[in-house]
Length: 237
Image (spheres, rainbow, N blue to C red):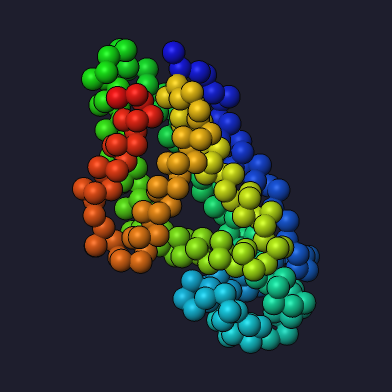
């Protein structure tokens, strides 16, 4: 018997995270001013993805954003504020993206589960389909959201050195964690939170390997075998 999750709880968590993000720098008071501030944050993120966090400097960001140097120092009194707000925006955008993702996938998963007839073969088919979809998810991330994954790696590394980012890292982790926990809740897992942490760790490791080796070098069959084995264990197969 499967438990019934709180409707759209993963979506609600993601939306709540997006709405809770707070920025450190000076607030923009006019639309044009906000566009310039936005350009500065986007430029800082491009530098982080391309050259790393240590390359973020007021002069470099101003040149990348094509704004006067005085604009970066007006909105951000120091580099720490600029880096913190760049990652705050990253979390806000990630939350908005994942809210849409969970909203679109929850119904599909519940439909798949509703087709189970209680047999081991039906559970096996579901486990194999979930594993296949997880591999597709990793490939999609690497092919279409590579910059996002690189920014995520930089974000987590910088948080080890910068306590100001700790709350943002926890909020960012919560977005994915809540969604995967709900996923296992729908499947009827006895320990959905623990199962979610393990599956998330597997996927994150695969994404990292894909960034390191290149998506063309991904061992798709090996990834599928690992994910099938994990899902079979979760579903008691």
